[in-house]
Every structure is written in structure tokens, then in C-alpha cells.
Amino acid sequence: MVIAIPDVLDPRCVAAIRAALDNAGDAWVDGRVTAGYQGAHVKRNLQIDETSAVARTEGDAVVAALERNPLFISAALPHRVYPPMFNRYEHGMQFGTHVDGAIRLVPGSGTKLRTDLSATLFLTDPADYDGGELVIEDTHGAHTVKLPAGHMIVYPADSRHQITPVSRGARIACFFWVQSLVRDGAQRRMLFDLDTAIQQLTATGADESARVRLVGCYHNLLRMWADT
Image (cartoon, rainbow, N blue to C red; front, side, top):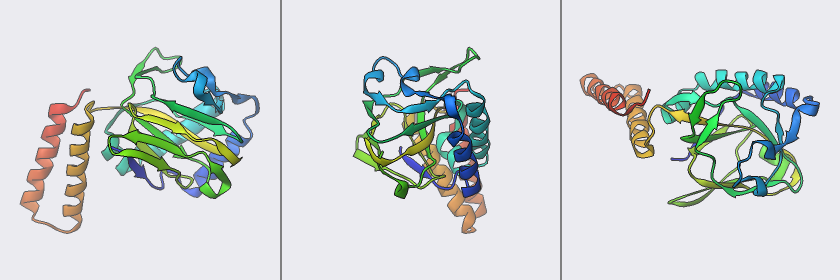
């Protein structure tokens, strides 16, 4: 399930994060420092050192926005969120086709996180750079994604994906992974569809008794499938 989530960050928050990243100086490092063996040879970008103060501060701002976003909560059913990271693709930089590692170790914590979902939060408007599209492959083909600043795409972490070469400007984004309460993608999709339908029924003032029964079905399925 590939889901675009609009307006995760408002323009003021995007501008504040961009200003902090633009002034990060030596915190920008070679992106290959966090690439696994299968990705290092196809990865060429810059990345904020995830142990730096700017990474922690701006990452906390992103997490706070995620906690306030009902569409993200409904789609991802997050159990753990890897501390958000930030990358930059300049002219000629790209990340070839790869699959994200299944397990990530949260720096300095000893905590391991299963990567059920990958997320990219765009911090640069599409008009400001050429290339740099996120291309996600799934059973329905390839999805090409290039969203406005402040918007986010969430997709299965086991998908083959790539970032195409940037030919003008710079592509700046935040990225992270989510361990969902529901490991199985098909179950997660059913819960998302059910939750979406319940919200639509609520908004239209549908039969309250039927709506309550559907809410009960949603929570009983979540209770059955959740891995806490």
C-alpha cells in the first residue's frame, strides 16, 4: 500500500527545518555511512549525521507532526518510529534500485526496529529541482513520486525503490522507517480501508448503530492482529 499524506508539515515548519539544515555545516556527511552492503555501491548522496544535534532537534519536530496526523496514524498504525533522518541529492547524485534493510538499530539505544514501512517527507518543492524522483516498484508496476514540500509518501519497506539522478538544483528530504503494530501488509490495508469507511460514515451521519458495530469490528481485528 502506497499512500501520499499531504501537509504533514506546514510551510512555516518546512522553512524552519530547511534553515536548520542549510546551516548544518559539517553535520552533512557521505550518505553511504548508513548504507548496508547491498546499497552502498548504488548510493550517492549527502546525509545529516544522525547523532548530531540538528538531526535530533529537527527529527523531534517531524515526530511531533506525525503524532498529530490522523492519516499517518490510520495508515501506518505505528508501534515504533525510527528517528527521522535527512538527506540531500545534488547534481548527479542518485540512489540506485535497492531494498531497505529489514532491521535497524536505533543509535545509542540498543533498540532494534523492524522496518515494515518506509517514509519520505519532501522538504523541497518539485519546481526547485529536476530529477530526484522516488520510484517505487510493487505488484502493480512502478510508482513515480515527487511531492510538494511538507507532503509525505509511505510505502512498504520491502519494495524495490530508487531515487533517480538529480540534474538541476537540490532535493532535500526527511526519511525514516516505521515498525507497525500490524506486521502483515494485507491486514494493515484492510484496517485502513475499514477506518476510512467508518470516518466517511461518521461524516455523513449514517446509521449510528451500524457505525458502532463497524467500530467494534475494527478494534476487534486490531486486537487480534496487533503485535505490541
